[in-house]
Length: 348
Image 1: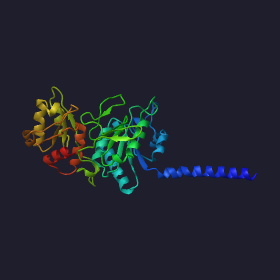
Image 2: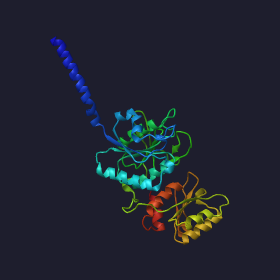
Image 3: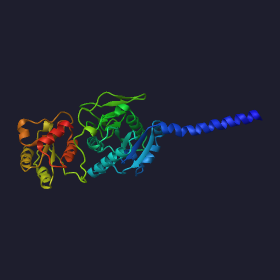
């Protein structure tokens, strides 16, 4: 009887120790915050979107790498994301980092349509060296082989990598790590849609470790010259106007007439434009509104010439038209010269 009692007591003690060990182990894991904005990663075939908590609950493996906390920011497709969302999201992330020094880093779940734009805005305005990783998916949460869970788990692993610090905002999908500055969505349907064709991805997510092979050379986050000014609630109006064969520049004139603070012209290769558009942007620049020339061609820098710079044009370099727009919107929160705009483009 004594031996049986001893065995039962030991078994009970062992069971209690195992129960107690679960929270102790969990407490040793780093904390990661997931900020959910909606998008395909939250989408369902029947309509509607999962909450951020439901997205995380669908990936139980996350509990093995981090203590995951969730904050619901919005629940919209990314085609509905606006600059107002960017401003509020950036301010919220900076507030979280300012008040929570023990947080390891952040994951933002986002739809893929405007993911690269939100990521680049955060790349310029987040004022902390801790990792911010933006993830999405090409298949909704109820699809066969949905990619959202794997992307979320990969994103968490990247956040926890010591090598992810001071690399700016990162985009993680399909086991690839990209800089928010360089990445573009290049395919409407395939899982390998996000690529950094010209400069290449920063690293990969392998089963055994996170592997980085390069860092962004341009300024970002803690080294960025661009910030949200304290009083900014709405960003300046900067439209993107596309050039095309036979363009009569009517849309470009309309953008100017509607009070644009600056205009991005998505021109042909190298920033070349149709004759009417060239005439129009010369008039607009002379009226005191900056015009930035970008290209519809995905690769190759748009470079200025002494003659072009004297005319008051700004050149996108290797920034896409939509990312050049974001930089201008931030730069134009206060009066800025054309020379200053060009310097900011070159540095960021």
